[in-house]
Picture: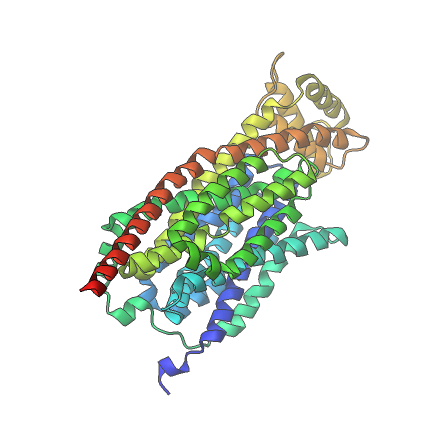
Length: 489
């Protein structure tokens, strides 16, 4: 039996989908534990942004390193590396003791995520060469689908009292073991580049010397930021305002999964560029509305519009490139994913965190906060007194904030960290509750303001995709006229 005849497309597609579930469960779980990590390890929003961002730009590193060699290394080898990375990253996070190990664990999992995309996007294209955009949308159902699974399970663990953040990390391991069992001994088809005899040089030229490809890479940075930036922050931002952010994320992801599964309806009626244009316009409305969500009802309503807007961005961008610049092959698909996640991880997510820190700080009530810090300094053990680690950490954070405090202003970052340290210290009395009552609204306001910061970039996509859509429409009309003229002859 030949290798080609031994390929089982349905099993490979199923395994690909489950590997993407592992990727998206990791995305959901890291979002679900951000607030807990911030409190337990006394981390700033910027530090949390770097941990969350590592889960994205690490993805990009894997894409850049391995996507160009997908044709030569083979997709099965890439999936084996993904399997190892997912397991190793989960263990590192579970055993983490501070910012550095949390960062390394998130980065290792992200490498596995990037390897999944580097292997599975060209795999799906090779398995279904005549229906790429639709099948890529259906494959990418399981990114939001996995976020729903991860979000709901994380929420359920909290509700039944198993709220240790390490238990949530275990949720990543389960789909990892499943896709490893399904896929790692399967026969894989050759990539489209190998089938077509496209050389490495041709692939690089098509990727880096095609103006349309370069334009789509720039657009991918913005579409990915619009989708993944807010989704990375939505859980802690809304939860700091008393809204169940993990359920809002699950709702967004569930809608995205359903809409992607039915992508053929939109793609065949509007064309890929029409879908991208509509997505950009709807995303702007949803993002603006979400940035003003102060109630549960408003959060879910705005999240619905936002989900409709962003759901088709990622897979349709990949399908568009695969169809319009086919000789870019696995490198083109990998580079699209790499650019998108690198920008979100290295720029968008930390930038949103820094905006949340700055704007949120301005919302802290100066007199009330200063009074609370002074009370906490009196109640917490001094530097020369033996105390439990949480109380000792809180004492150091509070004294650092007071030392930097002037008569008029509170120090940025240090003040919020001191309030978080008080909240997680286990200090007696009502100081922890009062710290949460002060910091929560400020964090919520700053986070929502960071959502609005993306709007100018998302709005620029309306112009770009509008021009592409108009060009496609003119080409279609020209083709129709030529066809009619030919029939007349």
